[in-house]
Length: 95
Image 1 (tube, rainbow, N blue to C red):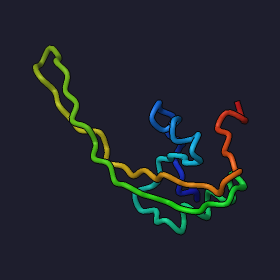
Image 2 (cartoon, rainbow, N blue to C red):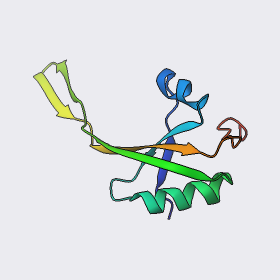
Image 3 (tube, helix red, strand yellow):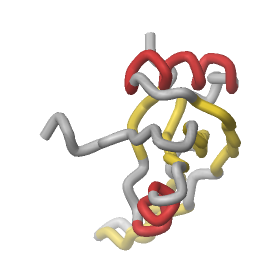
């Protein structure tokens, strides 16, 4: 089972791609060794560094006929992966 959920493609994350850093959403239980192994096998690149961070889910609320309803998105984990210079991960190759 892969520890990677999906790549994060935002304006800030895309700006990091030019520096050889890629951002992924990963399983909350994944560690850096598992993330490195999965990225190297899936994309065929050499990983030099990994930074991970846990994210807290946002509180969301909406008004309904019955009144105000609030809830929370689930917590998650992100990994910012630095690859060896010259290696590139192309997220759009499968489209």
